[in-house]
Length: 306
Image 1 (spheres, helix red, strand yellow):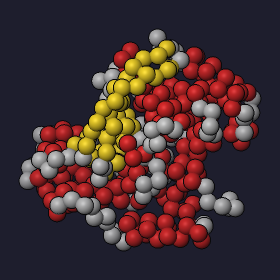
Image 2 (tube, rainbow, N blue to C red; image 1 turned 135 degrees about the vertical axis):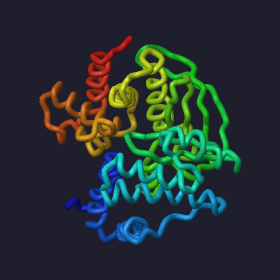
Image 3 (cartoon, rainbow, N blue to C red; image 1 turned 90 degrees about the vertical axis):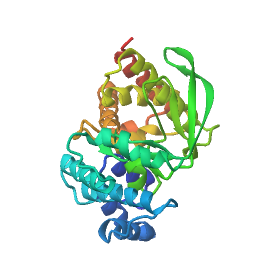
């Protein structure tokens, strides 16, 4: 057992979708008893979270919470859990759901309910699992972003007033999750509350990461999630000087589920460092920053798609 609780280890389990591993890890530490008890309340006793919205919206959000419990805590087969989510949403909405996909149901029917209350709604899958992003306000700013292939201006949508930030945020009780995304329209979406807008985390892990996605998608709109994340995470390593991101990537790494692009890409990056330097992962984690940047740049250039 580690001497003290590590947020990187904990968040690594969450990013991989391994809720059982996260709970077992947390259980080892007496100083994390409050977090462990909260897991038991929500996932074992089904004491679901109530949000600051009306009763109808809370019922929909409870349906999503039941899906999270089934797919992550009860380890129900992923597509079966998605089918049950669709059935419950269809029943609540008063439709039969037979001639519509879950993605279309979210976009056309569930979204309408939230939009009618003044919210923005984005459904679909994140790293293989459903879980909506629901927020109140959007403002835009333009940023000049330097990438390995030059500087370009990107429009960033700063999203605020969230009531749902998909499954990783929910599973971790707000300790980790998606900080932003690009939709293939050349714009970057940023969850404003996740960042200090002057920090390296924002300038590198959000702006450069998502700008690399936007660039890559402009070249190949069908690029896989794993390839997109692999190149964007390497960009993070190239430009980061204040944080040990390799430590975080080692905890996230997992290639058992290729639909989880973040975990598969992290595994691929660590494998690349091990191969380039003939080191084991523990040694890779301790590399000086300049060497990390140099190796990351080599791996990025080897993956060039331009």
